[in-house]
Amino acid sequence: MLSSSSPASTTAHPPPSPETYQTPLRLLSLPQITRRYLFKTLSLCLAAPSLSIAPVHARGLFQMPPLRLSNRYYLVRAGESDYESLGVINTNPVAKTSVDSGLSEKGKKQTVRAALQLKEMGACDRNCWLWPSITQRAYQAAEIIASINGISRSYIVPEYSFLDARGLGAYEGKKLDSISEVYALDSISMKTKPPPITDGTPNESVSDVFVRVTQLMSILETQYSEDTVVIVSPDSDNLSILQAGVQGLDLRRHSELYFGPGEVRLLDADSIPVYKQPASAVYKCTNPPNCD
Image 1: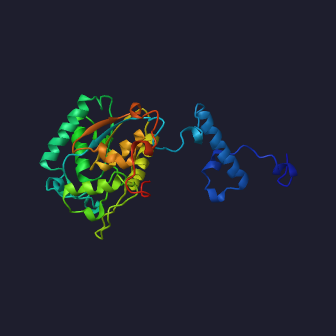
Image 2: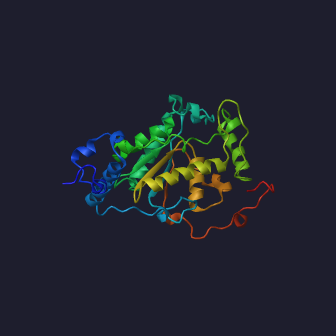
Image 3: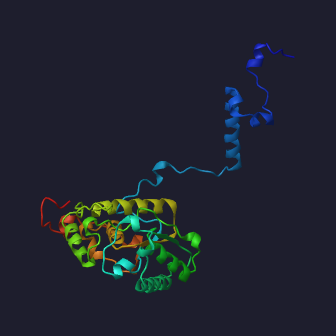
């Protein structure tokens, strides 16, 4: 029998007892720690021999326009809000969860029609995920859509920032028809912002919104595969800029894809053009050099 001082005892370790793995980490020696994690790693591999890890480059970063979409998407603008029923622009995110930002009576009816249209289109026949903005009217719209289409509330995933209504800065509180002035600026440059204001309302350019909706699509394309996702926005600009980006269209002309309250559109991979025309071929700049 070897003594505790024998050289062989420093190289030949007996199999660790079960108690070894119950020992707090701070009491383990380096050889014990190594054996412990090696044992756990081997156990995991033996328990799940079919486990495979996809290479990092398999999916890559989401880009606009995408080569393909992994999911089927429906774009829905929530029905008219109480503010819109008064003909007033309201985009300050501070009030987005306020009951005053909810659907008007007309907006509820518009949303019911949108929900029925989704049902006619078979959008949620095999279940679907509802991704509404946390904005009051958008979330109310998602609940109506879920109820009419038989979707569990657990499939409603509120989005807290990427689907906020586009911040229109100094246009906050102005008449709704003044938004045409914003669209005139958009048609010149996607980087032009509405004038700022000091009440906390952001003043976002088309580029700013484009970044947000691209981040949203990146999440959806990573989180789901071969699923149906219904995106519910409180305003038109999120959806028109998203659609223009996915289809590879000139973002300065996004207002030509305007969504009316309660409007529904299907957006799938087949709608993406094979060839994207350069901006110079479809639009002439009226105020060079501010045309990027």
